[in-house]
Image (cartoon, rainbow, N blue to C red; front, side, top):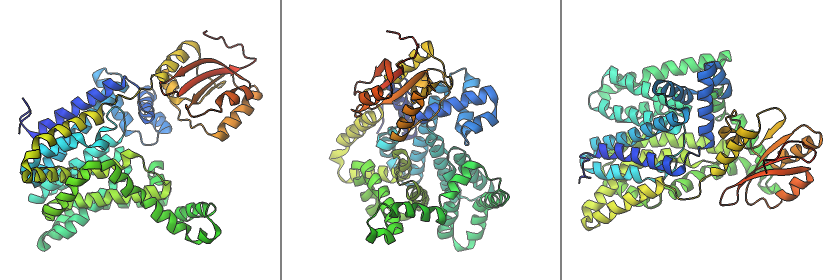
Length: 481
């Protein structure tokens, strides 16, 4: 199987991924995701004021620092530099997944390449700037290095494996769970006569890291981000959350609040995984039935480690964003691709339709034709020309502020903050009010009038979501109309 001038599955995965990322960003017409705005803004702060200022805005700013260096080194704007970095990281991840599969099941390379390009979760965020892409790349790099190391163990490669995971943790701290996962893998898989030596090769940095974290924890100097993540596994925190849930339960069920919290939260993971996998569950189940399990134990341990991370997170937060579950799908991708290959070996007449379906899925998942959120861009441009970021400006739209060139500040509108805003307006604290209004909010006109506000500009998306700019009724702020 060949695709025109592309002569290898690795090239198909890498080049295909870059093209899909380019198409996704182009079709989105430059409207950035909220997290991406934060990372770009922190990159600008780093370039202007250094590390301390960047860390005060966001306590784990490695991606932003990387964006800043790429921006300064290439002359690209920080936002473009972020997209370039993410596209390269994701393309590298796709290629490494294919490389891992070809070591385990050499004939399946082409189908694995098509699979990783078509996976829905992997493609849903190509137009966004997120930390996951760097996290995924370095985790998969560590797995690829581990497969090579397992054939001929040596200290240098063992060190590179550990360093790859530590770099992954600079994107997302939970990557550190893959260090003990690798040790458990070798504890079960290494020949008895080599077990101690192999575990020593992979255990040096985890031991030093554990000692360093213990010292930082006991001295009270543990970085804030690590402290927050470690607190998620606190029994006291779990008990506190269970106590809050118990108050919402019928009296007879309150004593089981902890059980309901634990198992109810954990149920979210398989539900999301199955929903996200869709038709890819078929080749995954087939692969688990027919392919030798010894080939996939490394990815199995990695899958279990990621599953443990999600279990801790969902028990603490009671929700899972789609991109958190994508990591599970990512670690299952080589098995899914090999399952496709095995199925098409058995049912060869389905090969062409399967390839066409995967190509269509890759395109459809990466390129969205749904309405873009250009109203944030328009609102931001209006603000840049007509207003300024000051203490007397109430801004509920961080995204409009980003396009106005103001500092990005995440703001969540709730009923409580709207009521507090009404009181602040009545006390004369604001001259300009910027609001995000979802199309479902039918009470907004009444609230606006009750707050004593006069709308001067409205920027609407095609689905009815709006950014509304208003002033108190007595304000002299000029209208553009």
